[in-house]
Image: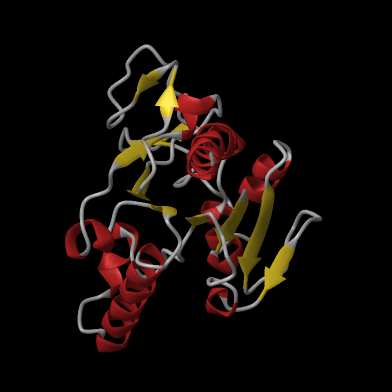
Amino acid sequence: MKALIACEFSGTVREAFRCRGYDAVSCDMLPSELPGPHYQGDVWDIVDGGWDMMIAHPPCQYLSLAGNKYLKDNPERIAKREKALQFFIRLYNSKIKYVALENPCGYANRKFRKPDQTVQPFQFGDNARKLTCLWLKNLPAIHIGGLPLFGISDTSLPKPKPQYTREDGKNVYFTEGMKTSGKQRQLLRSKTFPGIANAMAEQWGGYVLEQLQRRAG
């Protein structure tokens, strides 16, 4: 089973798939942080390479809700947001049969469609909160504890404690509490947590492989 992990420089999801025996390759304009098969360049160069599935992490700089405050009287940023949305939709509509797109809540929720599922890192064993939306094409929702998870309503899972509490009483978690800024902060926030990456590889990898075997048999 061949899996393309698009817009990933960390290698986290790619290696989760490869550890389970799948032929996974990551692709990004940046080099891979982890050793492994990686195409450094434009995803459109290789998207038609006969992949069975694709997990893509489209850049969210102009799509997330966090960037809305910069849109007022900023036509250049608005144009970049539209371009980012078209990139997002084009990935989803690629010829690859099984597709998952990951992004924070934002512009795609409103202008493309609502996500099929939202997940949090703490639901997969990582001590962090980072609401993640998943848009799925021919893939099932990720399961937790053997049960399908819709939304983030499973109260039996321990939620992480805040990194600190501000003077105004607001709790600060992973994404808000980073000490870095600028490009470094953007890169750190874009990484997939290992627990979610392993769930993707274990569940979606197994699902796609089963579908391929059924078609071949």
